Length: 153
Image 1 (tube, rainbow, N blue to C red):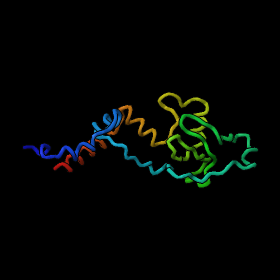
Image 2 (tube, rainbow, N blue to C red):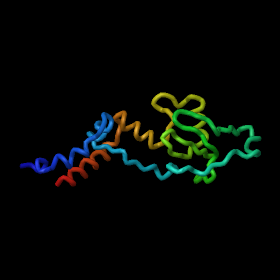
Image 3 (cartoon, rainbow, N blue to C red):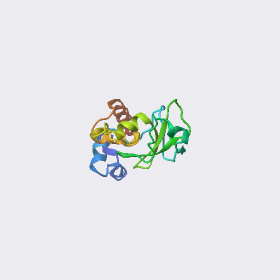
Image 4 (cartoon, helix red, strand yellow):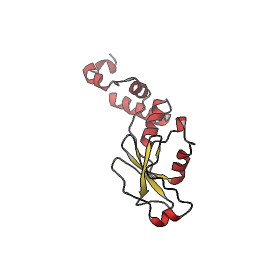
């Protein structure tokens, strides 16, 4: 008798994926646990932002991006706290998460340079989209498969 024959099906059945996409992702060992890179700011809670000041609006190079909608992102305002030099804008994705993006990225989205597969979205949505399209990290998938094998033993 193999080890898998001793597994109770009532305990395993709830672990099966519930739809086509989940089945495709789970079949490869990939999963949706995601954490943002350390260099970016991603939060489910609102990130503090402010409106442009009068001094900023007078500058000829300044473009007010507040309220701009591009792809899945809506620009809320200028980030109050910035971890790096340069102007950063707080954006809200349709999934409800908040991120901080550079003005250069948002201007490129507004100009239409981000279209098709490069639709503007938060990092979590982009990760999910990559998994849905079949692009995943084989090293992470192999590590997840090994962890499952170790749990079965």
